[in-house]
Image (cartoon, rainbow, N blue to C red; front, side, top):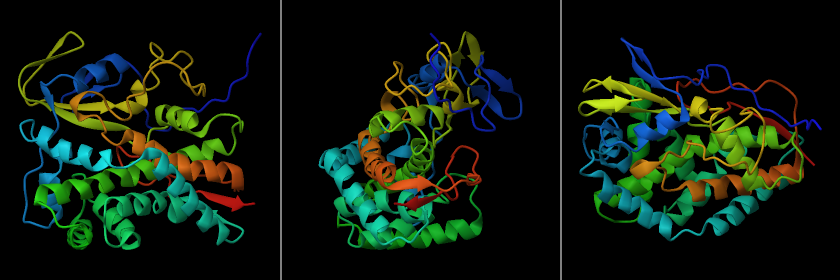
Length: 338
């Protein structure tokens, strides 16, 4: 008997899942699940390191967080973030996010933009409060300003806004050594676009899918099919191997999670929505640099999306993503509270 399952097609720009491809100008593109996983766990492939900058600036933050740290400094800086998260109960985060989402819906009119009112505010407000920031409401827009210039390529105006926002966030952060304060702020920045993108995608699909699927299971499947972080970059520190081929030192490598998460060798019928299916999506990474806050991010997103599933219906219309090469975050997604 044929079973009709809902599907989510690849978003525009998702590359095919195929053996690694070398572009002489841009470097290697890696799209198969096994190849992406191999690079993420091979110490020959390293995260591009951010150079330090003047204290209290965006460059200082990038140069101090674990995300952009060299291998010799990464473990200690990551431990700071892990310690900060260890005191946070994911169930409590979910409950707090659901409560705040309900409060926003209670005061909404007949239409509400999920991205502006919820996805970009609720997770950051909840997380900032539990990380001890003095003004969680003011922290959310400041974190968004930093996130807008966090990756290389931001223009001078965005960097200046981010510099001011870093200074504001430091003023809100409890006293601690500089690396501790930086990595607490880094947790918020890492959560900003990724969690907002997950909420936007999950809400858009969840409001049209069967209601019986548990929200967390749905989120995990949306992370596979429409990851908010579509890829990440590495560079070879020395001679390396990739799918049986030699890779020269200093080679740029782009790992595409969006393609690897649809690898039919790991996920049969990869476009089908099958919450609870076997196989691990790579969106949170693997190895020593995987996301330390994945349980917390899922909990925050689940708190928001679960309330939306029970209290809202979607407003028909196209949903456009923000312009970014490796992030997918809806600009706007409207619902009608009920």
